[in-house]
Image (tube, one colour):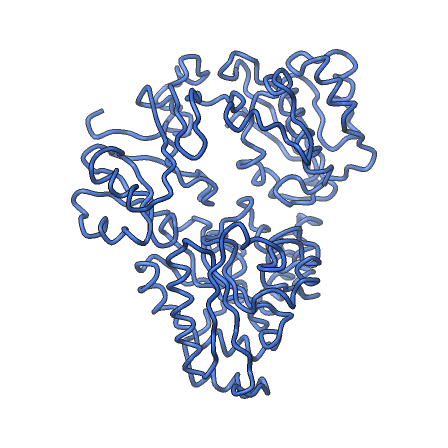
Length: 526
């Protein structure tokens, strides 16, 4: 949104962004390429100079880059709005992978072709802020001690609203930015990119309330016009369709739910045993009883929205077939009577996770397989030894301590970035930094994984990933419950229909934010 345009080199290794001019942060500091450069390298530094600092994508070669305390000190001395000659020479050093060529142009040079590079920028690190403000208010800190000042006093952004107050765990207050650079955009310009809308109300408060009943009560009483209502109280919303609207994501969203089977711990380390589990689990039953019918079947790992790369080979979701499940169980060579109880770990507070686990427990009970459900606090759930949350190497080292069955992450899974490479890089990759919940990797799959970041030849990617898709399907490391149209899997953002006319959400439909983009909210009465 802050780029006027961008281009890619013929070999898909160099991306040049021409930034919008005459854009300021809400405090009046200019937005320019120097600010963007400073944020990118500061993020790299805070990630311990990890080359995959951009949402786990290892697309840069930082050999020869020396960015650290000395450079930060120079930034502090010079400022980044109008850098001095010493800092400017560093910013314009085109031997570094990210460099500027002018106040309004920044270049990203990749180590190898990656044709989806722009798609890793719209979230997280792509949310640009005023680095000059950070430098004037204590700086970034470091990897082990990031400056906590900005938790309650966030740096200025370029958007249509400004934070005026924060109370941790309670609320964030916003006021419309009278100096917003886009306040005079025409109706046609806003229609072309509605996320640039200056907004329709002066003040907005977003409350943080952990109790679902409290959130529903606020909506029902009119204390809030928009509210997150999850599975415990969602039936109350569905029962009153004339009063309440429910946000449903479109078919191109990238949210899904599923479970991982530990491929390195007995007995889920047996492929035929995993296939028996796949065919024993009744996905239709889970969809209706745990997710209010809000799931669409999927064949992972690719997100269904990535249609060009989804379900290569046209494989069907595993059928619910107890006869076939018993056949695979027999072929596994395992004796049900001697099997240990399977640990199924789910996160505390996720009611649909617990309901799903209970349904799986009953399904596998029909095969004589015992499942023990272990509800785990969220503070413990993402430890590597519990869920394989860390790298593949870490997950492999701790595989025997991890549960045999576990939920993806905490509840609904959303990608780090909206690229077709994302799921392949995360779920089955010898080199993944995070999210290999099933402790799964395979040489055939790895060829597909490696192709994403090394070639721009889509035909080659399709060929390698078609073979990888078949390998995934035959190895069955994950139970793909389905893609969800409800924002929270079982429940969604709800609104008062007599007040709210329309609103927009996360523009890339990845669930990175589950709040309405409130400057896009329009009202029934204007």
